[in-house]
Image (cartoon, rainbow, N blue to C red; front, top):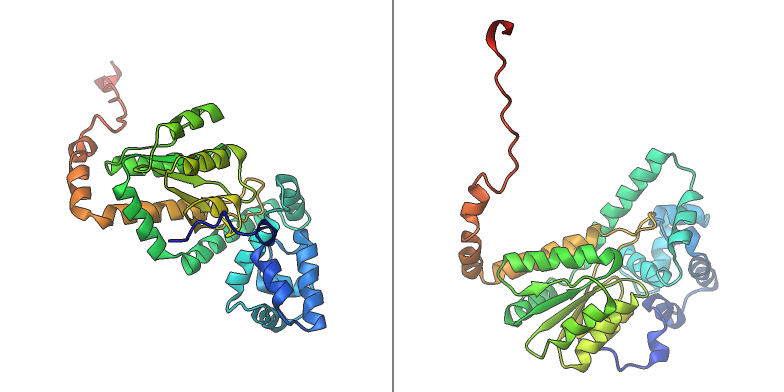
Length: 307
C-alpha cells in the first residue's frame, strides 16, 4: 500500500509527474517544442487520442509514440493518464465545454465522443489498476470497526454506492450527508480501529479534504480514491487508488471510478467468501418475495358480451 506522502517537499509536490518527466528527459529540440505545445494548450490536447494528437500538431503518429517513449512512457495510455492529471488543474466545467464545443461534431457525434471517452477511461483503469492495492484495501475494510466514506457534490453518488455495498456485506459503513459540520462530527467519533475513505478528484473539494486531514490528526487510517498521484487526496491519505474521470462533459466521467468501487466491493466479498455467503443468505428470502418488487395491479376483467 502506498506510504503517506504528505511530508514531501511542497515545491516538488506542485509539479505533476508529466512536468517532472519533461524537465528531466533529454529531449531533442523538436520533441521538446512538441511537448511544450501540448502542455501549454490544454484545450487542444486534453481530449485527444494519439492519432488525433498527431493530426492536431501536424506530425505522424509514430512521432507522437517516439516522443512519449523518450519521456519514459512505455505506452501512450500511461502518458495520457499523466496528461489528464496535468490538465485537471487547469480544466474547469466552462473550459471543458468550450474545448468540446470547438470540435465540429453533431449532437449525436458529441454523444458518441463522450461514450468513447468513457470506454477509454475504463481501458486506462483496467491497464493501470493496482489489484494488490485493491486487495489490501479490502483487508483493511475487514479489520475496520466502522467505515466512513466521504464524498461531496457529484462524488457523493460514489460514496453512497460504496457505503451501501459495504453495508450489504455486513460492514458498519456510512456515507454522511449534509454540512461540513456533520462530516466533522462523524469523524470525531472515530479512532484508530476505524477507516475513512475519501473520494475526490483534481484539486479536490475542501470539505472532503478537511475530513481526511481531521481523521489523520486523530490517528484514523485513511484511504483515497482519486485521479492522480499528486492530488490532495493522494498526498494526504495513507494509501490511494486511481481512476480517470476525463470527459468532454462538464460533469466529468464517473464510469471508471464506479467500476473501481465495484472492484473494491468484489474484493471485500471474495476475501472471506464464507462470511459473505452467511450475510447474503439472510437477504435471500427478501429478494425472492413479492414484497420487495413492484407488481402491477391486476386489471379488472372485462364483462362478457359487452355487459
